[in-house]
Picture 1 (cartoon, rainbow, N blue to C red):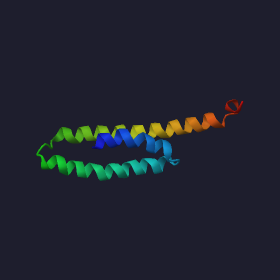
Picture 2: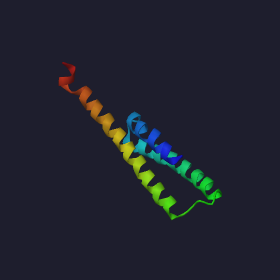
Picture 3: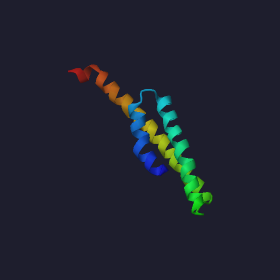
Picture 4: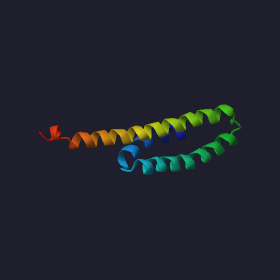
Length: 88
């Protein structure tokens, strides 16, 4: 569930929200809701071990990276649209 959210929400959120800190905060808020729910579900199936937290840390890093990538792509697109060469 956390991986799906990282792949489907992080980059578009970074691209669509103008303020980079706000988009990152929104992504971390989504993660802060999803992670405990997912952890409870995994714990109820008695499948919780140390690697679970390692992989979830990697997924969190992936989501942060995708969010920052979305923000970078938005800034690059805005800069290209504002350049005088694009108007010609």
